[in-house]
Image (cartoon, rainbow over all chains, first blue to last red; front, top):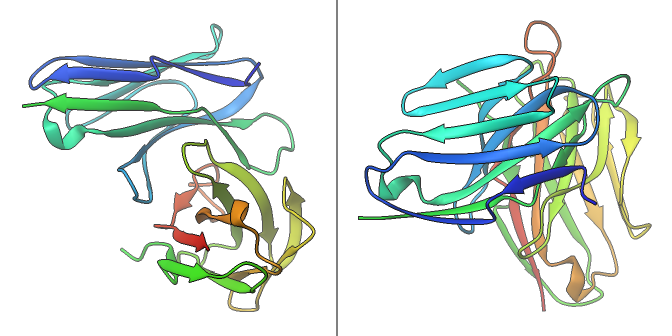
Length: 111
Length: 114
């Protein structure tokens, strides 16, 4: 079983819809990243969370440490949001900050 | 603000050739991580350096080596290339201080082995 599980694997939405992508992890962590990757492109860090909630524009990320769960929300989705969204965690306690990645969620937003 | 720079952005090599990938961290960042992302795969940690010393090692083949130089840039050297080495290789850098946890990612080098 992967240490980091994302759902759904694929998500298709219509422009304007509210989108939620979920991430569950099985290990203790000290931080969680939400990353965005466009097809064939590099990785962009959207958020780094260790507790609570963060908001940037139309993007909101939340984390519940007790439940080992995080969500990424996109409000008023737009076709340019189409990308792979990856959840990555940094372990707790001397893990040298290296990240363990989920398999990603492919989001397609249709106009 | 300066970001993580990687070069080259694209590289095409033949089997059994060698390749060198470079990563230039954000200024004053002292830690560099290398990740490999195969086609349709999630990224896998390869190796990391802190203050020019190897700090951790992941699933890096023996054919690969890496180092961090005095200016903190890092190079990933890949020898006897195989078709399965075709992947996106990206690096991330991290600094000390308030942003201790956060890694900043480079755009990646897409390596194609023919």
